[in-house]
Structures are given as structure tokens and as C-alpha cells.
Amino acid sequence: MPDTSTPLGPDLDSALIRRRAERTAPAYPAHRFLAEETAQRLLERLDYLRITPRRVLDLGGGNDLPALRARYPQAEAIAVDFAPARLAHLAPRPSWLSRLVRHEPTTGIVADAHALPLATGSVDFLWSNLLLHWLAEPLTALAEWQRVLAVGGTVFFATVGPDTLRELREVLGPTAVHPFLDMHDVGDLLMAAGFADPVMDMQMLTLRYRDPARLWQDLRASGATNARRDRRRTLTGKVRWQRALAALEARREADGTIPITVELVFGHAWKTAPKTLPDGRAVIRVHRRP
Image (cartoon, rainbow, N blue to C red):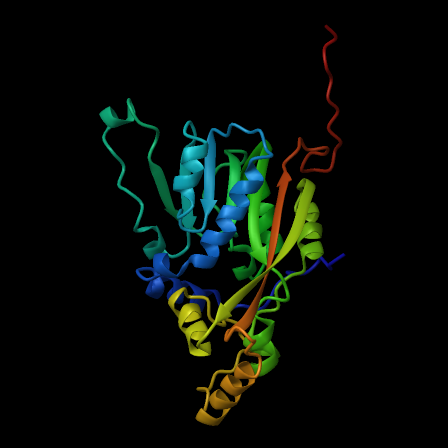
């Protein structure tokens, strides 16, 4: 079990991540193929849950809310992102008259996932697609997500595991890629944050590139480049760059492509009624006999 007495996760430069998210927001929809794939796999897992949420929260720009609203048309939808440009695609709020014939519009909120400006117990379903691994303090964030969920509410998420981009780590060095959390550690963090009955699973996905330079293009265009504080700060020299490309070329397979690994981690958990009060006193529930 991880040491939950200290913040877990890589030491990330959150300001840098925000700047990159702002800069790449216009191009992001055309380069979120991985997020679209994980969203589809998450949606398939929703088939096994029988829930009717009144309020749905998408942590990460709201790109997946159209699919969620189709599934839960009665729910109010909220999108949160710490980069305002990532929320620019959301439609403006319609008039009061249109609300009589259509469901509530999506509300966009600029906020940090570690500190949500939402009331305790105000959300029934929290969706997080490929966000958790960008957070420097995932335990703090998960505890905050648990706070805003109502009792009986569900958190549903996808993140990436430690084998993700292992090929880049091997050719560029250990600080070239974030140290992603293992599936079991994420499950332990859910429990430490107060969630109940976590369900975790993992799938390996292989991306195939004919041109290794295209991988860097995709990472830059989606704002998914290295943000570790201990990352290499100097420009990659020509010799080092050519050496990295040669190392990737050596991995080219018979079909002419270079495989790049992505370890997908999926999970969901529930918020149950508290067993203790904030001051530590036990909660005793008394039920009237019929």
C-alpha cells in the first residue's frame, strides 16, 4: 500500500501544464484520439451500472459530456477544467424559454481538480477521463472528489499506468516520462480518500507509428509533453535526437510500424454514508421498525 502520509504522484509543474493546455486548446479536439478511445471504453463499462444521476460532473473540459448527456438526459451537466480555453467549446447558456423544452445546458467552471468550487454532496456522478495522472497530489484530488459526491454517488475514471510510453523512457532516460501510478496504488488511494468498493482493471494498448517524429507531434499538439520538474531543461541536441530516433527505428516491426505502449487503467468507486463525524465520533443510525 502506498504511503498516504505524503502527497503521491510526480513532482509536476502545474503552471506549465496549464500554459500548455491553453496553448494547445484549439488543436486538442483533433488530437484527442486516445481520450476518445478511453471514453468509449468507459462508456461500455457504464452499461453495467444502473444509475440516474441528477448532476454529472466531467473533470477535464467537457468533451465527453455529449455522450454522457445522451445517456443521462435528465441530468444537469457541469464541465471543469483549469485552462479556460479548454472550456471554450461549450455552448452558451440558452434562454429560459428553451429550458422548458430542452435539458439544462452545460455549465463550464474554471477550477483546479484539487479544490472544486462545488458544495459538499452536490454531484451524483463524477467522470474523469485521462486527468488523474496529470495531478501532482492525486490523493488530495480524490478526497476532494469524494467530498463533492453525494452519498451513493459514483466516480468513474480512466488514467494511465507505469508502462505508458515505456519506449520513450528507455531511449530518452527515466525523467523523460512521468512516473505513472500503478493500478493497485490507485485503488489504495481511492480507499484512503474515503471511497468504498473500488473496482479496478487494466488494459494494454499499442499505438503504431510509421514515422517516430509523428509521436512527438501528437504529444505536443495535445499538450501531453513532459512536465516533470526534474525534466531535462536544455534543448535536445542533434546527436541525442538522432540517437533516440535510431533507437526507436530499431523497434520497427515486420508491418513497418513502431509500437508505442499505453497502459490504460480504469476504475470506479462509490461514496457511502460516513461511519464517523469529522470530530471522530461514530455515527449510529436508528431505523424505525415498520
